Amino acid sequence: MTATRMGRLATLSGVVVVWFVGAFFLWRTSVPGNLDPPSLNETSLFGAELVRRAEHYERFFRIEWILSTVVAFAALAWMVRGGRRIAKSLGLGPVNTGIILGALTLTVVWAVSLPFAVASEWWQRRYGISKVSYAEVLGFSWASLLFTVLVGFLILAVLLGLAQKLGSGWWLAAAPLFVALGVALQLTLPYLVTLDAHKLRDRKLAAQIEELERRERAGDPEVLEQPVSDQTTAANAYAIGIGPSERVVFWDTLLDGRFTDNEVRFVAAHELAHIARNHIPKGIGWFALFLVPYLGAVALFTERRGGLRNPATVPLALLVISAAQLVSLPLQTAASRRYEAEADWTALNATHDPAAARGLFRRFTKTSLGDPTPPWWAHVLLDTHPSALERIELAEAWRRRNR
Image 1: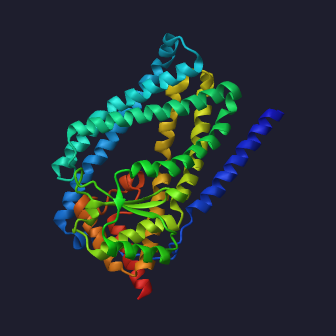
Image 2: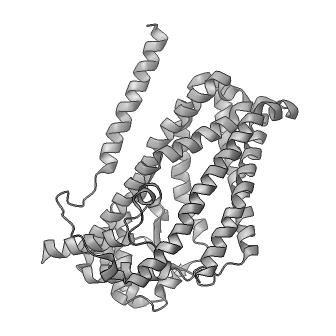
Image 3: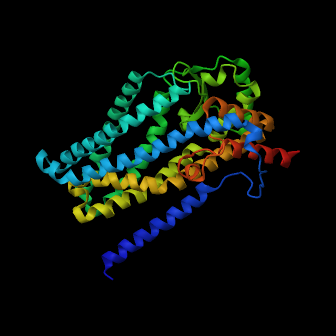
C-alpha cells in the first residue's frame, strides 16, 4: 500500500471515528431510558371520525411526497445526461459554467415540483386549513426559487473554486466552511423570519413564560407573536436562533381562544425546552455530521468524470446529494423526534401538567389534522415529531412516574 493510500485510509478512519463519537453525544437526551409508556387507544382518545378524517388528509401528502420525489430524481437524472452537452455549449470557464449549470438544474427541479406545490395548496384549502391564494402560492414558490438559486450560486462558487485549487480533497476543506455558514444563518435568519412578529400582548402568558424560563434555565430569549391567521387556521409555535438571536415565536392562531391557557403554557414550556436543552446548536452538529459524508459521496461519484473540476458533473453532484439526503432521512427524523420528545419531557417537568399536554395534542390533531398514528414507513421517513398518540402516551408515563 502506497503512502498516499495509507494517508487517505487514515484520514477516512479518523473521520469515521469522529462521526460516530459526535453522533453518540448528540443522540443522548434527558428522557429516562427505562420508561414504559402505556399503549393507549387512538379511537378512545381522538374519536373515530377525527382519526378517519386525519388519516385521509395525511394520506394525500404521503402519496404526493412519493410522486414528487420520483419526479425530482427523474429531472436530476435528465440533467445529468445532458450536463456535458450543456456545459460545452456555454463556452465559459469551469467555475462560471458549473454555476450556470447548477442554477439551471435547480430551476428544472423547481419547475417539475411546482404542480405538487399547487396540489398541496388545493388539498389544504379543501379541508379549510390554508387561506393562501394560488397566486400567493406561485409568488412564494418563485421567491423560493430565487433564494435557492442565490444560495446555490454561493455554494457552487465555493465548491468549484476549491475543486480547482485542491483537486479531489476539496470536500474536506469545504465541510468546515459550510458549517460556519450554517452557524451564521442560525444567527441572522431569525431576525428576517420574524420581521412581521411583535411582542406578546397577553401579559399573563408573558409572566408565565418568564417563570418557565427560570424553571428550565432557558435564559432570556425574545418571545414573539406572529400573525398568520390570514394564511392558515393551523396552530403552531417554534424556537429559533442561537445566542443573541434566540427567540420563541407563537403563531397568533395558537392564541385565538381555541386552546386553553394551560395548553398554551405547555407549548411555551416545550419551545423553551428546545433552547434550554440546546437543540438548535445540536441541530448544527447533526448538520455537520451529515454534511461530511454528503460531500464525500459527491467527491467519490464525480471523480470518474473528472470530479468537480469538470463543471459538467454539477448535476451529478446535486443528484448524489439528493440521494444521500433521502438515504439518511430515517436517521435525521429519528434524531428530531428524540429532541421533540425531550422537549415534551422537559415541559412536563416544568409544568407538572400532563392533562394540558393530553388536551393540547388532541386539539392539535383536530386543528391541523395530523394523523395520530401514521403508517410506520411514513413515520420513519417523514415525521420530525412523535405522533400525537406517542406524545400523549409519554405524558401518561410521566404522570404515572410522578404520582
